[in-house]
Image (cartoon, rainbow, N blue to C red; front, side, top):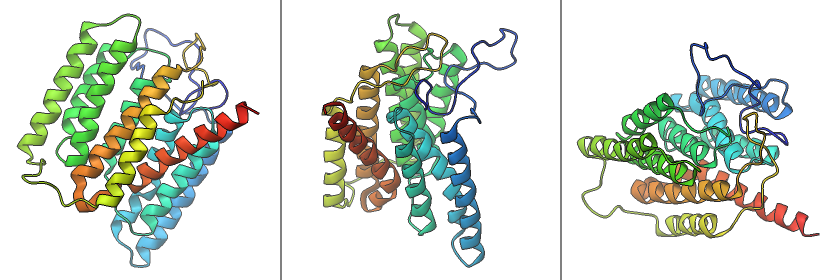
Amino acid sequence: MRRGISALGRQKPAQSCSMAFRSHVVRGFDVSSLSNRLMFGLIAITGVASVAVWISGGDIAVLWAPVQTFLVWALVRELDPDHDSTALFAGLVAGLWILAGFDVGGTLPAIGLLMAARVVVNTTGRRPLVWDLAALGVFAAVISFTAAGWVAGFGLAIAIYIDNRMAQKHTTAGALTAALAALGASAIASLSQVFPQQMPDISQLLVLMIGVLALVAVVREPEPPTSLVDSRRKTPISQDRLHAGRGLIGVLVFGAAFLAGSDAAAMGPTVIALTLVLISNEIERIRRRR
């Protein structure tokens, strides 16, 4: 997100009303962006490394390394829009995490967290269209067949509600979508029996650390961002929305880690990514006060 665009690249200033597809939450890639080119290079390197590890006898799960690299990179671009390096480093860590043989929370939950962050922070600068809301609501329910998926899906419903409340003009469609997404996600989770029947066997120290991280994300206000939204208005990204997005992701990661029980370490890449975002914020705070 160069000084003036958001996570995945600059959109063209104008779009024809006759376009076959139009979205206010999905965007294309700006290949002229150095950050995006570096990301593509990182994904390519991670992909080659994952194939090499798999051929040499590694688990087939390592082939997901480039996907997780991209998703973590994209998530951090939403949560730390002013610093390209934070996202690239977080993406590298995510790729290495899988190449080393560690588990992750899943691809669909990761996409859910990414979309929740984008909806709340509103880096596109545009409110979700009706079909955006419909797609997000359905997606929130569809991914909820696992514990991590339910957390991400329910979190996406909360994100839709937060976006609707923080907007200057509230819409019935936004409120209704948030409610239906929350109900749908919970219904799918119940049918899939993802909720533990007894207290999960958690790693107390790890979950406590993630809880502290989430608390910091909630109470620590980010520095006012200088990056601009994608829309033609080119207004700065909202500090309040950025704060809300970081806080929401922190709480969701804590919830996913708690429900994961002994498998909480699978949230490692996302936890590290959020940690890097908060560290970046403190470095920026120090820099601006010099």
